[in-house]
Length: 70
Image (cartoon, rainbow, N blue to C red; front, side):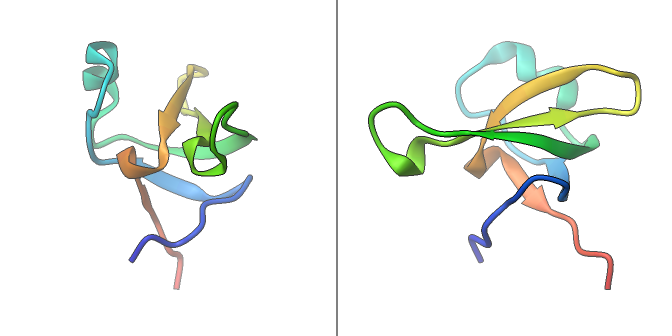
């Protein structure tokens, strides 16, 4: 279920775990532009997602749902 997310993947924002400002992005889809490695643990990665309106925001893996095109 927890498929790896990589640069270029289409994702949808499904959860608002830590940051209240992310509420604006719930349900929106975007493309992963960059994977930022966690400083303390590898599974602390954050994903920079770009949206069609030009905004970019960092999200944790649990906030993202991988959208498949098949």
